Length: 64
Image (cartoon, rainbow, N blue to C red):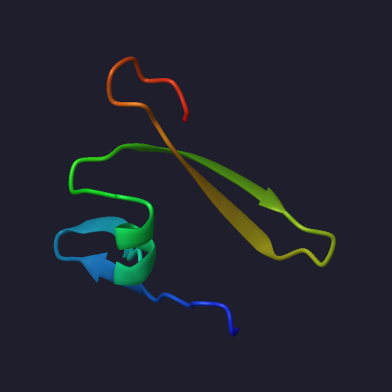
């Protein structure tokens, strides 16, 4: 099965960038509007940027 890919979009009036979560992944993992994610970045052994999102628990801000 091929890996899913996403594109980066800009927002008018800000330098913030948006990365979408594909609908199938959102459904499979019950991701809803308003869910919060912690973000970590690193470089892999080939120097590529790795961005990791960890969903936070709504009740107390802890990761799942």
